[in-house]
Structure formats: structure tokens, C-alpha cells
Image (cartoon, rainbow, N blue to C red; front, side, top):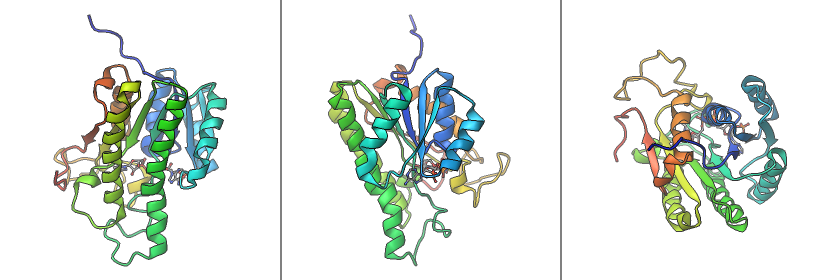
Length: 254
Ligand SMILES: NC(=O)c1ccc[n+]([C@@H]2O[C@H](COP(=O)([O-])OP(=O)(O)OC[C@H]3O[C@@H](n4cnc5c(N)ncnc54)[C@H](OP(=O)(O)O)[C@@H]3O)[C@@H](O)[C@H]2O)c1
């Protein structure tokens, strides 16, 4: 007999939850009656998301993941806000539009490289590592969901794809290492998804996007549905893997 599909953990801290994919995941989790804390650098963005999502179970937390020494304090604050914390969604990142010149930063400065990698690479590692520590310390059979990117599967130059490939590798390594403690770590590698991150080239749902086999952009809600699956009781058999959800992107090489 089929059991009901439910979240494995219902107190979730969503980094990058103020917009785009993170916000869509927050919305999907709230539908499952989860307590959700959204975290990002901009208070205005978080409050706008709170206004839009209209839920008493949604909390806002200003924080910068690039300040890796602040992670534990952010976890403690989220725990207080929700009355518990047992799952993490890591959706915060700086993307192709951040430098205003796409994926091939031939003229990138060392300061720009540091800004990108401090968030997308260094913070992604420490966040995952600190979340695992948090769950182990509490003997919590928690969930960690990492938002990577199918940019990891492309021949692109610069830090973004390399950072996302690392996230896929850390997801696999940590997922396999801590699955026996009941900690389920998985990832999603989306293709081009209609969010502020790619607003410089993706504007509307009906805009054709021939690079994807489906010839359209992905909607954040579609990624959120997959996130719900991976964070549910059904999803735990996928442990240490990153699911590519790229609408058949022709630029992917793996
Ligand atoms: N959209 C796509 O086509 C696409 C494709 C593949 C993968 N992804 C990945 O999907 C995830 C979500 O991106 P998105 O498309 O939803 O873009 P987005 O709307 O720009 O969301 C990124 C979020 O991350 C937050 N953020 C950035 N730097 C941060 C930091 N240092 N500390 C805390 N929060 C920070 C931003 O909020 P603040 O500015 O307020 O900090 C923002 O809410 C990212 O990991 C991205 O790489 C996106």
C-alpha cells in the first residue's frame, strides 16, 4: 500500500529564500505546513517575499552566507524563530548576471573573482559542512538540499560552473558519508529558470528558449516541486545525488 508523501523534516531554513527558486521552494514547503525561515542579505527582499507568501509560518532572517563565521548564529536564530530546525535548503548564490557580462569573464578582476567564489564556492562548502555538524550534534535525521546548476555540466569558463560542480561533488561525498545517521543530502541542478538571476536574458514564460529541448524556460515552481519530492519520505532513497532538471539543455556536455 502506498504511504502518504510527507516532508521528512518540517522546520526548514532556506538560504536565498527571498527570491527566485528559494522563494518558490519556501512557498511549496509552506503548503506542506512546514515552518520556513528565509535568509538573504536584503531585508527589503525578504519582507517583500513575506508579504507575497502571506503565512504566519514564514520567518525572515537577514544574513550573509559569505560570512562563514556567522552560520551557527544564523542557525540558532532560525531555530528560535521556528521553534526548531531540522532541514536546510541552500539556494543562495551569485549568478551569471552579477558581473553584468555573462559566463565568460575574460576581464574579471581578482576582487570580482573573490566576491563570486566567496559566496558560490567557499560559503557553499562551509554552509554544507556547518549544517551537517549542526544536525550531527543534535542527532537529527535532517535534510540538506543544495541548489547546484546544470552549468556544472557545461564547458564554461569562470568560477560559476566550477563552484556548482564542486557542490555536486560535496553533495555526493557528504550524502554517502552521513546517510547512515539519517541525514539526507541531495541536490538539484536546474537549467535556465525564470528568476531575477537570469532576468538579463529571460523575461517571460512564453519567451522561446531553443537551447532547451523543451524550447522554454523552467519555472521556479517546477524546481520547487522536485525539491518537495527530494525532501519528502519518498525522496530519501535518492541520497547523495544531484538531479539534473534542465529541460533538455543542449549546452550540457555530461
Ligand atoms: N535561475 C537560473 O537559471 C538558475 C539555473 C541553475 C541554478 N540556479 C541556482 O539557483 C539558486 C537560486 O538562484 P535564483 O535563480 O533563484 O536567483 P535569485 O533570485 O538571484 O536568488 C538568489 C538568492 O540568493 C541570495 N543571496 C545571494 N548572495 C547571498 C549571500 N552572500 N548570502 C545570503 N544570501 C545571498 C539573494 O538574496 P540577497 O541578494 O538578498 O542576498 C537571492 O535571494 C542559485 O544557487 C543559482 O545558482 C539558478
